[in-house]
Length: 133
Image 1 (cartoon, helix red, strand yellow):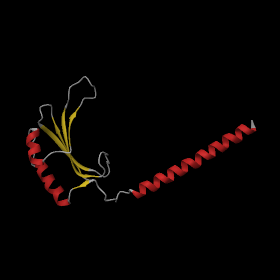
Image 2 (tube, rainbow, N blue to C red):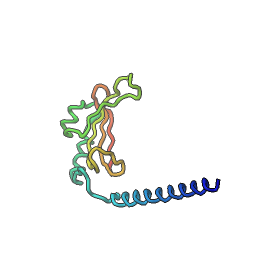
Image 3 (cartoon, rainbow, N blue to C red):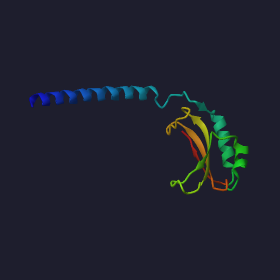
Image 4 (cartoon, one colour):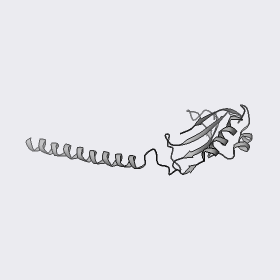
């Protein structure tokens, strides 16, 4: 019984030191990629961001999707907004325009700046959000 307790204690202590090592490595990594890292995959200049936002602000509710694309250009994403239930029809579309994109193919909520435009099932503009970071 004493041997089992000794073995369990060794395993427990070894696991704790492994966890500590992994935790320290993750801390080092997060410090390395810190929030002030400017290595963006894509980044508009401040002047271009301002011009783009001015274009977004002139959009009118009810404009069709092609009119919006003609004004803003091709979006980074043009996706269907699905329902939570697979048997229900689409709820419309969402266009995503990135102003700053930290990494290609990965969403970084704290670093990506974007404009999202929401369209109804008839491809008419309903609303938009501007997320500046």
